[in-house]
Length: 134
Image (tube, rainbow, N blue to C red):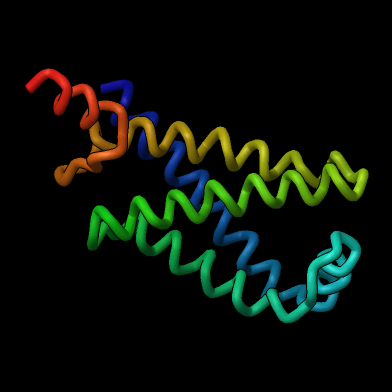
């Protein structure tokens, strides 16, 4: 029962973080463009990142395909790692805090997804243990 609650709470908070980020990209485009430029990234990434963030949330929440959901988890993982790294390299460690929180939520969501979802991911820990036992 704990894993069920852990999954839905961590997933909801992770998706809220990503949707809030996408909304910020839309509402405060100039501010985001300036922030990305200070981190060394081009401004044309804003619409791409906005779209990908929304699609990643949709893939995880809807879970139309387990493979697509796992791909969304992987994309979020790399995005959050690169975001934290960019902020740390720019000597702005405070900017890495949302990425660190997102990584913690992502790991909790991924590790508990098989307890909460009908279709199991072959890469999540419970599925791996089940395969090893057989």
